[in-house]
Amino acid sequence: MKVLVTGGAGYVGTSLIPQLLAAGHRVRVLDNLTFGGDQLLSFFAHPRFEFIKGDVRSRDDVRGAVRGQDAIIHLAAIVGYPACRKDPLLAEDVNVNGTRTLAAAISREQLVLFGSTGSNYGAVEEVCTEETPLNPLSLYGQTKTIAEKHLLENCSTVAFRFATAFGLSPRLRLDLLVNDFTYKAVTQQYLVVYEAHFMRTFIHVRDMGRAFLLALDNAERMRGQVYNIGSEDMNYSKRDVCELIQKQVRCYVHYAEIGEDADKRNYVVSYEKIRRFGYRTTITLDEGVAELVRGFQVVGFKAPYSNA
Ligand SMILES: NC(=O)c1ccc[n+]([C@@H]2O[C@H](COP(=O)([O-])OP(=O)(O)OC[C@H]3O[C@@H](n4cnc5c(N)ncnc54)[C@H](O)[C@@H]3O)[C@@H](O)[C@H]2O)c1
Image (tube, rainbow, N blue to C red; front, side, top):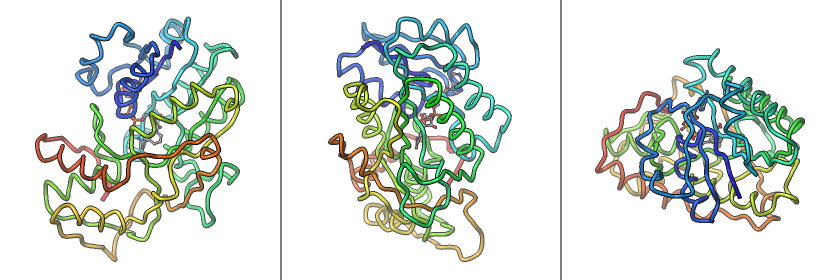
């Protein structure tokens, strides 16, 4: 298939591109290169890879990019609680208006796979299914919720509400909880953790890619639906995550009684619906932490945002 990936130069996109190419798809990326383009260099040698520098908010850029594509994987966004808080107007413009611009440019024949998020649920007492009312607590979750609804109403869409990603990718994100905690454990040997009992749900970034591949192969059956993507085995408290990291890295963890986590998400998710399509995650948190530890020991990263 011919697949456009908006935001393909990001953390998820640069992990997904090789998976799409390996599955035989043609891959076109539309990205404004917020984080530069070095992470894309290795793909240019591939004859089925193409890059367009452009903005999802520009009608002309989007029209040109979607032309002739069978499927659009929409990832371009201002991602995460800290980045959205830093520039709320930009977050709303890219996440909501950018998505509307994209929706207006594509036909019903073109499949849209949307990288949505479990942040849409907020803090929920019962186990979240796809039917649980959405109650996003952050601007990030709010803008993603609006974008998801717009795509489901106006395009032929499969929306994936992903767990929080972890693992190495060519454009590494250190604001993600597991990546951030592991980075601090390796580089400063201590962690300060607020609200350690908060429950979160995790997925390796390459398992996110496998969900997109599944949807490209099962578009007719999956269209028009929302799916939680992750695994019940990977619903962990923040304390669980710290204890798991401590098994691999010598570090001191201070569980702070005073202070709070600005990211108030606290939820447990059911992944039964996607399991009916045979989807299972393949990479455990232990394996992901081990991969991160190996990476952090050799490469220095700048961490503008932090989770702890
Ligand atoms: N990583 C996760 O845990 C996670 C979980 C759930 C959902 N998602 C979703 O997956 C998608 C990708 O997330 P990520 O982790 O790769 O984030 P990221 O910040 O690494 O990537 C976002 C990409 O979008 C691009 N972009 C930003 N504004 C743009 C614009 N105006 N026009 C064109 N491109 C633009 C950036 O340059 C970047 O390459 C997002 O939509 C995010 O909401 C991510």
